[in-house]
Length: 343
Image (cartoon, rainbow, N blue to C red; front, top):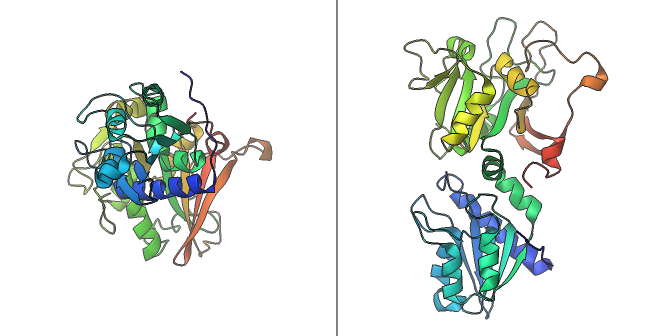
């Protein structure tokens, strides 16, 4: 497979960013399909946007082409992900693009799915359409990280979300932990649940906090609930999947069931297990402007710490945002932050 990178000007980058923005509307409805955005730019400069619908509905490219109608002839189509070239619940997007008479297609990233994997680009080029690949690729990879990781590894993208004080404590010495962070941060936590196909906690957290793990303070569906160990009868987390095997086997199983993103919410020993096994793809830490002031309160990770400074895990901060009085810090392993995970 040969997919050549294109040359892009400022206008190309602006329009690909519009396609990325359009894809935001598909984030909560498209799964397990990728959340893709597309923009058609007609010869007269008019633009038409589309995004992927719920499974069985039109993909982003087809949605944008339908809005464009006859204006698509001779137009340029921007799409965040390579157009599919196979039939599933819908027909191939490549054929719709060819039939519409589009002259040029600008693609953010190639689809690693084995059903596509460059064939969409090749089919369009074989039809005489100019195809340029790689516009705003880092931005698109970030938006589609969970999908790209799943199609590349067969496992879900694992997001570890924890909340702590400034000195890294997740509860008081008496075990009370509600609420370390404020309303805005808690809403963000619910948004993360809505973006995830499954959410996981340990049985100790279920016994201590009795969380429902549903989406309540945000729009979007509630994720599938998973408990490491056994959840007590009557716990609010039911119905849930109870798991007692290896974490790697769990990820393989969930990946086979089209779980694209798994949100791990703790507790400390569960977080440490995922972290030490190198299974976390993104760390989301909510820091409250509070200080426990000692070393006898529970920390974010349970168990033994790194023996020396050289053994400490180091990642890269990929985003920071203020959430009310709290701060969200998003960190990824260096290989992922450098874009090596999804190539």
